[in-house]
Image (cartoon, rainbow, N blue to C red; front, side, top):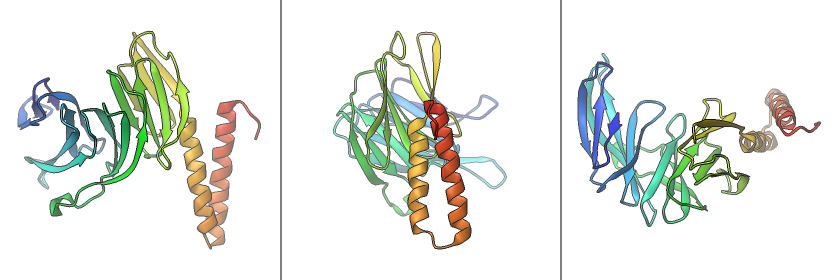
Length: 241
């Protein structure tokens, strides 16, 4: 996929042939991306929404068409960027209106069902601004200038802030596929951070599951996983558990 600064997105195959052309009708394309699962392409721009399309293939793998899937609506100003979770069932957006939003996109869009807004948080915004949603959807990272703020997606709380990460504006953000690390790039450098809010979110989620479980085997498994996660977090933070 390639996106131009006007309203055009082109879908390509690996032979360099154009499969489809999309007119986003957003006055301009500020950001565009392919979902990690490869099923969707999306864009944002001047308008306060994100438009998402499904790239459809036949059973034999032949390209069929690109169809509208859904839109993320709720911001009051243009959107800087967005991000998918690993399975594309969650998305996050950041806007010029000074908010970021966390969405449930696991919907039956072919039946006209719209995504659900799960959470809205406040954040600092200034162009360029990027957002990254961890693959497991537990954490959102937002870059503004040379600063990165990291929020949990359960309550929208800011848990970490990294100031002056790069000498110039941060160009992009991404999590690794395991959600253990956050990576930023800018000024000819790449910085890698431990995703400690992600570890804490996993511990919190498993502790909630532990309180609800009624089987001994599940309880023992969760207790072991919680212990391992806490030890990993303690090692990162330089503390003894």
